[in-house]
Image 1 (cartoon, rainbow, N blue to C red):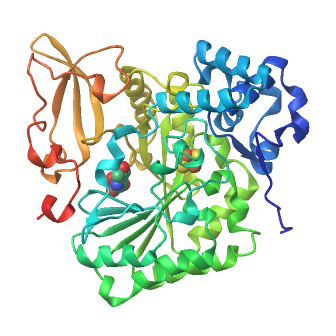
Image 2 (tube, rainbow, N blue to C red; image 1 turned 135 degrees about the vertical axis):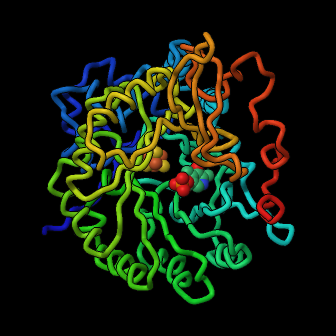
Length: 443
Ligand SMILES: *Cc1c(COP(=O)(O)O)cnc(C)c1O
Ligand code: SF4
């Protein structure tokens, strides 16, 4: 296969994209205005192979990586436009910072889950659930393109104090040695597969030795299959990366590739199909997840098709998430009732083999909360919920109820049903502790 050269498009060079002549003046203006506030990056694969330029700006793949007008409120949009026209850079930068801070840059209390070891905060690690440690390699705090809905957008926009990145693989390994209950390490980002194979090996290979026998599953969360499948085909270290995958599997660990796909179009190119095949040939299992997003995939048929196609390609549908309450949320958010309706319609229209998927799930401060449905209990309409993941593992899988609210889009807008004051978990000490001193939490 002939080598594909990666080429990023950002606010600085997007005007070079030939297909942009298909866009109206107002859509072009939106790229300029919104692109100054929310990080913007696309690339030649997304532009040439995924976006249907006869359908812009509504095209879901266009909307996934390009700024659209509705991603800012009207008032904010006008303010930024005015400052851009005046070319007053100082004022503009101040305004942009202000706007970013108002967009809930760090949702769901992620900073609460940074563990402490020997008195030091480990900023590249999040340990929220007993079995699984999240690791953010500092070199992987970027992606092959930026999703316009991304909840990690602050990591790309230079708000430094919010970066979770950590330099030392050493600290990660020390931490894991101290926590024998951890079975899973999940490499995340950004996208950890923006990191070269050599550096990834430095993080991963030591975990294959005997002292890490408690680590059973090495997981990599990545959107690279959909944004740059050539990472597994023709990039310089593509073969080295696949050999690393193979090594993990041969060492008797499960290498779990958590692939992010938001739309079936991302599964349709020759490049992605070949890349999937190559990854699967290393013994790696690919599972899939995506948020539910208005203007991108808010239709049960899209999800049913996506799951069917994934299964056909040997992937396992894993999670459907509710879009997070951050960034351009008004553009993407759906009422929880609608989210459940889409999930149920899609889930009930596929065979059991696709129903490994769980959702819709909100990654909220207390844990991953699934909307099981809406029903009536003694004349009161309620949401039925359960934890798929919880800071306190004892609460997982116990159904609980919230008062029905047709407008609610996120867990923090829900109130306990039946006039109760608290949800059953809210008074529990494990749930309210801020500093996640994991030794204390899970003994
Ligand atoms: C989702 C998530 C995990 C992994 O959960 P699984 O249900 O095992 O896939 C781990 N840590 C955090 C903070 C998460 O949000
Ligand atoms: S791939 Fe993931 S981390 Fe990267 S921009 Fe998209 S949602 Fe954010």
